[in-house]
Image (cartoon, rainbow, N blue to C red; front, top):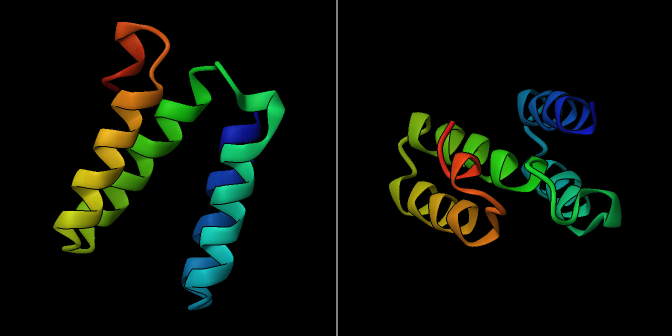
Length: 80
């Protein structure tokens, strides 16, 4: 699944210390027409929120959670 592939690549880049590369991969996933209107977008944002929270980046976690809510296409996409 595209979401899993993107998450794996983001994690790999993060382990390598390439945060800007990880951000570029994430942004490309968000812009991809294949992902528009799917559950993959809010889930990607929720996963990003979780990673930010685990890293102690509370403002980034809140922003990612809000983005997840904004792109959710169904109530079940708002929570994982």
